[in-house]
Image (cartoon, rainbow over all chains, first blue to last red; front, side, top):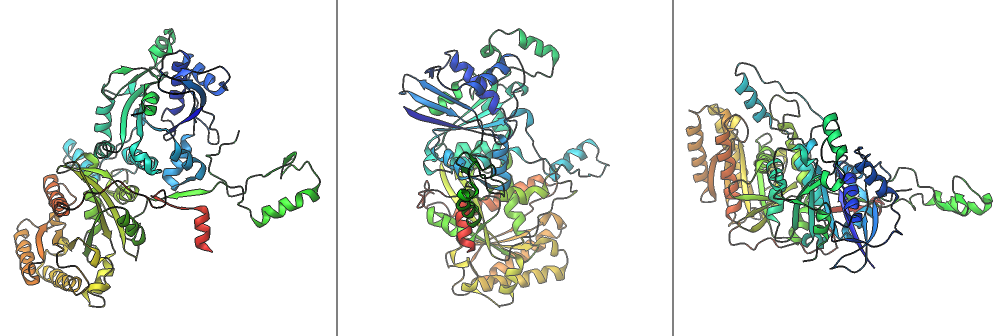
Length: 275
Length: 325
């Protein structure tokens, strides 16, 4: 039996855990080319995740120090029996890497030997940070007589730089990674105005988009948009609608880069696909 | 359940001993003494090793040379007095790519991505500042910023020096010259940056050009810039010059270029910040065109071949300790 290690990376609140629940549910329902091998795997954590999604309850963020995730025996037409591992690494671990520029050798080794990389971003918590010159020009357009006054937002960082920083660190962790697959998963995609995840990334993260395009001879990549919940639970009317759904896989959805709805397990399947 | 990915605390992890942990012994104290001694003598035994990554700071010269050994890199020496705008020029060139491809080139990566972003932070609205500033280059030692660009399917790596202006005062005054100037002999392009803000007055213009001539002369001494290396004479902060003043400055730059000989390939008045976006785009576009021009005909940057298995990562905890001892 071979091991298929998939690394889910992303800052806190980027939807990694919710997607693991959705993916797991899809596999258990037989809606994936990855066939569930047996009932002997420890499925406690994954079951709780899927159950919360089914009940329309927010999935709790993975606390620092916990990395239960998912380990499933799977098969498919192209694969021998394999053990699929999707560790649910806390977003704080990835944040620590970006801020403090260090990580444990265990994690870096896991990234180095991973079969696939999936990087998560949350479309609903995406920060742009205009230049002072642009902000002043915008302020002047509204009121040419008012002097521009800056307002500090110390927590604001350019989201696209953080995303690219993480991608670069992951793909360059291992030389052979330059010829493997990178999956970018945009969570909370139901909150954005555009249909196409590719278009969203190009508009909101031009630096990342250029990087991917410029390196596509060696780096295989794809973008997906995900709504694991199917909508916001904060709106009581919408929540009630979601609760009426009898199928999580109709409520929660995944779109490919062009905005075409695909199976909930497609991002992981794509990331693991052989050439 | 423990998480192997969790960052280690400063204190050593509890070491498992028969029937319990070091903090909850289940066997005789004597039996533990060896283990305790081992802990005290080597307290980091059970801590996961750390891997430190770069990207948040410019590359040291050694790291730059390592990159050059791995890839074909074009070295750009950026020289000029303190406060001339050298770092701002480089950071704003990078920042052009934040909104998309620039002049037909795409951003293809950087080993100093976070360093660029941190240097650009005080030009962004979130800084709370009313006007953009660039922090002074703090390091005495030369360092590099790295840019990887793609043009028409070809990748090219650029190492841009970020050197304190004070360093070049020594060249102006003849304390060092030519081969003494670190990185000069390795440069494939030299950009000499002059502070346009100091050229509004006749005296200021004269003094700035006087110093530039001595800087150029020093850089061109034997062992310095190679004969084939093009030199750009760039007057920054042109937006701060009166529009009527610019032709005068332009003409004086041309005269300086004539005095130096045929080594100056272009003189440019540029603006990197301010309200005149069209001028800024054109200014930085001109710099980028010349930066990438000499890349034509050179070998393309190839995918990295690693001699030691990985790069970008700096050192592990063990390597750091070894370096300290």
